[in-house]
Amino acid sequence: MHRRRFFGTSAGLFATLQSGSLLKAEKAVDSISGRPADTVARDEDFWFNVRHAFTVDRNMINLNNGGVSPAPKTVMDTEIRYLEIENMSPSYYMWNVLDPGVETVRRRLAQMFGCDTEEIAITRNASEANEIVQLGMKMNPGDEVITTNQDYPRMITTWQQRERRDGIVLKQLKFPVPPPSMDYLAKMFEEAITPKTKVIHICHITNRTGQIFPVKTICRMARDRGIETMVDGAHAFAQFPFKHEDLDCDYYGTSLHKWVLAPIGTGMLYVKKSKIEKIWPMMAAPPELNGNIRKFEEIGTHPASQRNAITEALDFHDSIGPERKAERFRYLRKRWSNRLRELPGVKILNSEDPEQSCAIGFISIDGFDAPKLSTYLWTKHRIWTVAIVTPGEYQGLRITPNVYTTLEEVDTFADVMEKIIRKGEIPS
Ligand SMILES: Cc1ncc(COP(=O)(O)O)c(C=O)c1O
Image 1 (cartoon, rainbow, N blue to C red):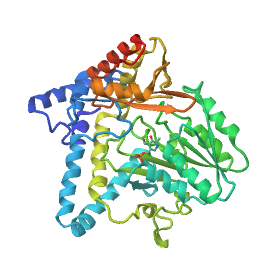
Image 2: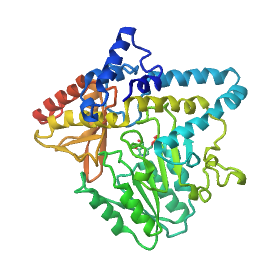
Image 3: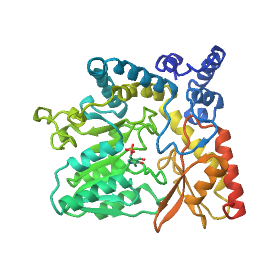
Image 4: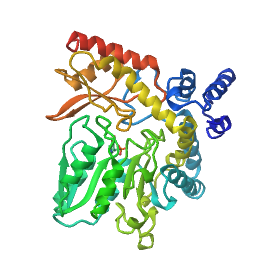
């Protein structure tokens, strides 16, 4: 990456550093120019500088960044600055001065996703983005939606509510983790299609074992059969690089407060231009907006500060470099999982194929109760993880570090886990 771009697009990235550290940072950036992303993934000088852009609590080890992530200080500062401005005289400063800035956010998000600016709506989270489509789509009794039982519970609840309200039918497919192949997942959907199938709803990457889906194959296959495709990208956007053309879906919803590192309470919805008109917004909009993506943002008074600070997060993301970020995530995941995978009873349930996995790691241990293990890690070691149970199938811990996570933190997790696993039980 070019040095000028690194600093030029992320003014404030090193704002918390002393000038001596800035010099060090410059050297670090110089030293990575032209080097492959998987090499930079192991370059602790580079990640040292990245982690100093955050103000996280280092007296806990946060391995649940998948739930929601801290924003870098530069993003927080921007949000606070906008908040202070809008609070001076909100009906003027928020509506007249700050709100127009949302069009820059829209343009930048469209650029990153690789679509037209007029196809992007800014939402409060992935739930809102996904539900706009799920609830706004015209469906008749008996119409089928196919998804999996490992999709996000709230999105399943949304379809289930439509079952009760509108008489649609939800089919949830089961699949082994890790699955035998991407083709297996695509075929599973193809075989489940019936003449009644109207929608295929898939996670780009599941929130459980972090399985990446063959989105493009499924979307193309669905389109050939006149079926619409809704992709829940809550975990994918900015976890690893891709563009809309790599997916070819009709609808895409994501959070921005996960891997984009944007302010908490931000999300994005993509709707293919030709489909905007036929999706009803969740909150009513006037008919003049029928074909306008902004109809999905008619939510009443809301802060501009969170939304407008998204651009700062996108700059930060670009400054690290999407490929480097993804490779760092894979490196951190392998660092702990390769240490633990051969121990008795251990099953690593995320795929090892780089096409099928990135930041999210998942460990299951025979005979261990995952919620109890997670509680033990927190109460005795201040290691914050999330236990995930898929009833009747598997349970374990989902481990999601972030760009600010240190090797010492990952190694401490691995040390503690190794001791517990060798002992064969959770210490009392
Ligand atoms: C796959 C998936 N979809 C949707 C969501 C909902 O995201 P949010 O809480 O930001 O609305 C999540 C949250 O973890 C998720 O993992």
